Length: 261
Image (cartoon, helix red, strand yellow):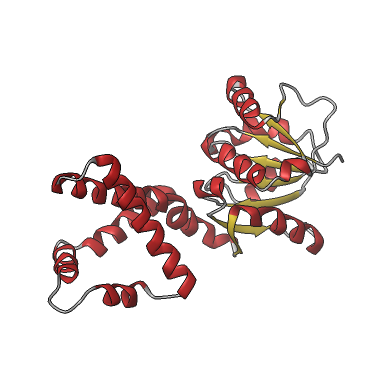
């Protein structure tokens, strides 16, 4: 096999993965090959990153094959996957387990499931991962090293992947919704939206960085900011009165219910 990575599916997640890997210069070690059923998608991404877009699979033998298609398109995609019996398959297809993927893979094969979020594009993603039994320890180490460029990689039992699909996969959208609300509050107070957006963004970024760096519990940090009888605790009280934490939990609960049907 050549030292190449074939991406099948150049949608939002597939594109984010490749951008994240190229950001850490993996395209200098591997030959990246991009394929999408809509040829324009793979061609545009290839042009952007100076990689190769492929129309057919002749003459290639990838070491890794990243499968980044929608669940409804998995069976069709495996017509391509099955051309590469020796490839290690990295699937980011939500809700399709290793057993089902192995059944589709005509060669049995080495299957890896990962549920990254879009933050992998800037190297700040969450990447939960599960391996099939067919992979050797050295192959696992190689994959973990490759994916470490994308953010926090953690090996988990496959049964937990659905939880991470919701918590870290859907999470950025809910965080973005909070940032939008914070930005709108600034605009309501009279701050131009461009400035309000930057303030909201930097506040969330700074808070997350400080919590991570000092390993602080959010509740403890909240108490550091909120002075007795001050403006911060008044805001906290208003959010708690309206069930803010419960609303956040309900958002994730509904997302999980939709995932599992």
